[in-house]
Picture 1 (tube, rainbow, N blue to C red):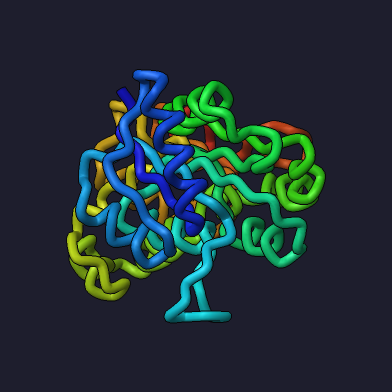
Picture 2: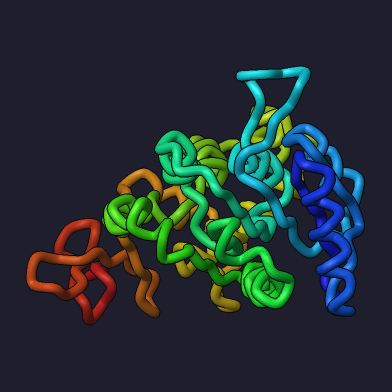
Length: 262
């Protein structure tokens, strides 16, 4: 049973979605919100939520033109709950929404679909399950708007991280502890930094069981500073891609037989 947050600023649509989702017997709406601010507060109040179903365009009478969108709400939520699963839906064609989505750098645990194409419960539930499993999906009608950025995102290790994760690894590379990073970013709990570190290690393939946290932390700092793919061999040598399509020592011409030691 999926435990959901439903974020929609039109009450009749929100009610219809809730009734339809719960009628399937596969989901329960634990919390509802009509604004981005309410959505962020709802996630803080409900630690057992599995995912959110969220409209991209969210009006907020108190904030007017300064109202945060659903994408902005997701970014804020993921500061404390890294890669919290979200299924976005929208009927808007305004380029500003697509630009915001691209700039947000949301990479996984999400779906982004057109409201008119995917708003039946039978279509939403598979998307929600996929998002909770870490997969991503973009409606074909939206995909061409984000494809250019997706292709550009493959050029560097930093591009594999979301903005909140980039900020954490930047501070990690400066030598700050998790507690210091949490204080610098205004996070309530240093465990949020630890969870973000785990996402960074996964994205950069540093989370193998043979690598302890201190080693993964040091290697993440190197990858961030060089902004190049780096792998480590059994001797602990750092290797980076070379012009021939292979891997060569990152730090000089180390001898492969003795790890660079004579």
